[in-house]
Length: 108
Image (tube, rainbow, N blue to C red; front, top):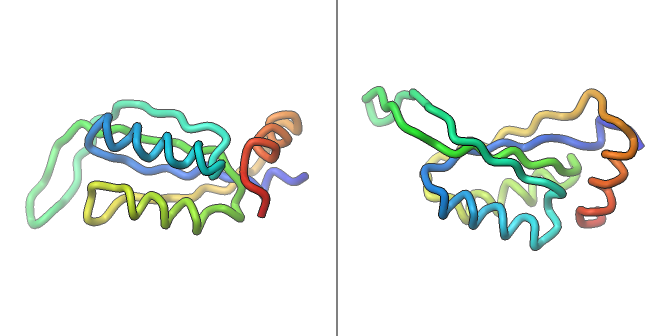
């Protein structure tokens, strides 16, 4: 079991309701073993304006092989026109944690 077979996927959303929906669906479908959420302050360009807003960042621990499926689910559930969906491969992790992710996510 290699750490590089696993990843962290991040997205941000504008409401607790949308964050909760994404979290519940991905966990129910076993597309992520763990999803953490934090409130963040964001600043970005959108429609020729600089926007400052509070967002919720979701960090999903899962298998790299599930990325495209997770991406499709997020795109369907998300409230944004252009959601952030970023996958970062794990460079290292303890084997017990990787085994837990493997056991808690769908077989691919």
